[in-house]
Amino acid sequence: MKLVVLDRDGVINHDSAAYIKSPDEWRPIEGSLEAIARLRKAGYRVAVATNQAGVGRGLFDMATLAAIHSRMTQAVSAAGGQIDGIFFCPHSPQAACVCRKPQPGMLLEILRRFGVEPGAVTVVGDSLRDLQAAQAAGCQPALVLTGNGVRTLEEGGLPEGTTVHDNLAAFAAERTA
Image 1 (spheres, rainbow, N blue to C red):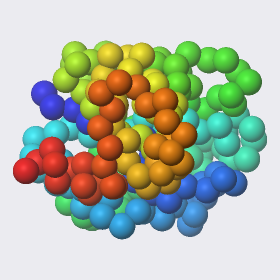
Image 2 (tube, one colour):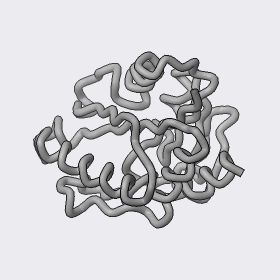
Image 3 (tube, rainbow, N blue to C red):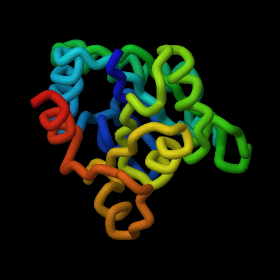
Image 4 (cartoon, one colour):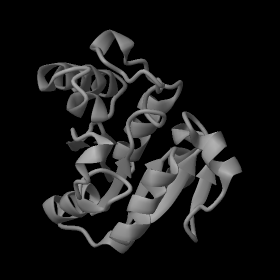
């Protein structure tokens, strides 16, 4: 099985320093929905791994997070794609949990649930913590230059072997060519 794990904010949809707190605030990045459809049509399963500290900070509740994810999955479906699983860490950074990226816990759970070896999985993110979690889980890290991606690239310190792509559409085009 081919599996790609995507960060949400800054990879699939526009990010916000004030958090995406409602379905109305969720706006896809141009080409991202079609990229997911392209990956799916090429035989990839697609999972989402996202830190959602806004829940832990009380900015929105689990029902709102579910509504945001429902909007996302409906938009992906309308573009001809499918998300096979959404995994999230609802904890604040102060919780020191094992699931919050850059810790690998969430990715290890995805690998377990999908029954895949880490070396065969690429994790696409826009922040260093996404790439560090990928590396810690034994997956291939890929940086997109949307969201925080340009700043992440400029700050350096990327894990060895990280590939860099303009956006999710460019990543998908390369993987499905």
